[in-house]
Image (spheres, rainbow, N blue to C red):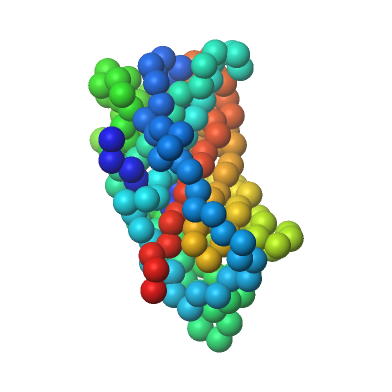
Length: 200
């Protein structure tokens, strides 16, 4: 299965009935790096090695499952005067929710319907960062406005950012965005976004 590249993502798990993960452990291996200081002046995303994935469980004890979004765009705008200062960077993500995939076609179709994402009415989701704060070495907290189904909420991702890749994580409260009912699956849905940067 093709790998996918920012919000970013989210919700196959919302039904709790997927049969297996769309990402293998091998595909999720991160590049090794010992770099701490960000040294790029421009950031281009390698979408073939990147992904926006979501995971969820039902009743907190069943096997976890995953899904992805095949189509999305990510823009990381570095500060012109201080490109290595990531706290001055801006991150914007647009996700085509209609590109959601799972290994079960009926589950995929259900997630696109009105009681979940209602993609006929709301085909896109967006994320726009409002702050990116370094909390030690390569660790960051990125806050921003996430909009799904025209509902906008402020969310915060934890992030690990190197010169080669960035990984962002957040537990999404799906009910904040009207995605499914409370008893469908666990309310917090873990999101993971991996962005691999192209070599200059």
